[in-house]
Amino acid sequence: MDSPMFSKYSWLDFLFSVVGVCTFLFDVGSDIWVATEFYSRGDFFWFGVLIGLMVLSSVVVQMFSWFWFKYDRELEGFDEQTAKNVLFGGCVKLSFLLHVLQLGFFCRHISAIWQGFRVWWRQEQGSGYAVYLTHDLSMLRLIETFCESAPQLTLMTHIMLHTNKARTVQCVSVVASTTSIAWMVVDYHRSLRSFLPDKAKQGWGSALVYFLWNLLLIAPRVAAVALFATIQPSYLAAHFLLIWPVLVFWVWRQETDFMDSAGGEWLYRATVGLIWYFSWFNVAEGGTRRRSIIYHSFMATDGGILLVTWWFYRDPVLTQSYAPILLATLPLTYLMGVLFKTLYYYCFHPTLWMPSVREAGLEEELPDGQEMVFRSIAPQTGTPRFRNKRMASHATHFYSEEEARKPSKINGREANAVV
Image (cartoon, rainbow, N blue to C red):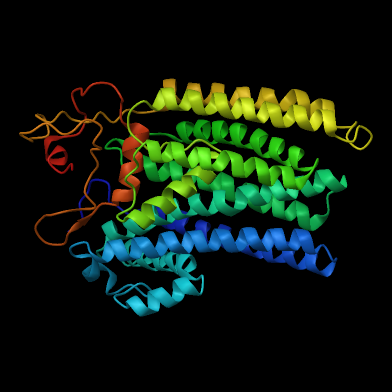
């Protein structure tokens, strides 16, 4: 019997899964349309860049999906839940082939919809596994968004600024990328919320503010990078290759432990470095406020340098209609994003206090800095209760207090399930 806490699958979960796959297909369709348009017009450079972004994003997402598929097979009771799944049963060779053919992510969408349909419409058991699948999809969509949608939005914005005109296919691509980013932000926020004991009491106001501060921080970053690329695209490549290793090094210094293998962990760190190039993403517990201040100070400085450099080297004739407006509004937009983020943390962000060792029923003190996250599957009588450790880890980072251990809002039964 499924646990009533954190694993109840609802019609809203099913709706999010359906909309998620529709958004994914719309994004892929717009990518193919743009690539075909570039090729037919002889813009082979932009065609190559776009195809490169699509292939890179797809390969990264498939690698994460395959790693997680291998990890999950080692969990107790997992094969029993996947045996009835239409595409992700116990056939490892079939799953590997699907991922090699770049179909693993799409098949996860179909599997989540099928499992959700069985649980919500047919009233069958397996609610915990259905929620487990939606949490993985939320994380994979986050990765796909910042590996493809954000760079592609930057590319399309750059092309429109560089040519000083916007064609229909480019506008469709911008809309698709923006929609993908917006949906990812709301979906990821909702997935994190599902790990809160009082998630039912949380309204949509919190999600709206969370969406706004992400949008107001990502938009000026994308615009600044796109404007800088109009000077000389090769300079942008050099800029990224200088910033990205620094960000990856910072992730490594935070001693992340998200994946279950060394190779997978370095893939995760490299991906987080790419995400940080566009937006903040908390990956470790403790010192969150300090790290956030350092990150936003660095990105504001870097964005200011990009914007000022573009201002002095731009074509004053082609840019005279919008250059002063952008120079004034982009920094102001970023500042508004920081203010909305501050508002969120002070007024809308719930706190999930981590229990002390004694309160959790443990006799020995845990080492300093060790994360306390829920197990993926908590042993119990009957059908095992699924808990997605990957998203639970991020929820712990996002909602836990960095102060000393205080009385927990988590009840004793849940406290005994921490690592």
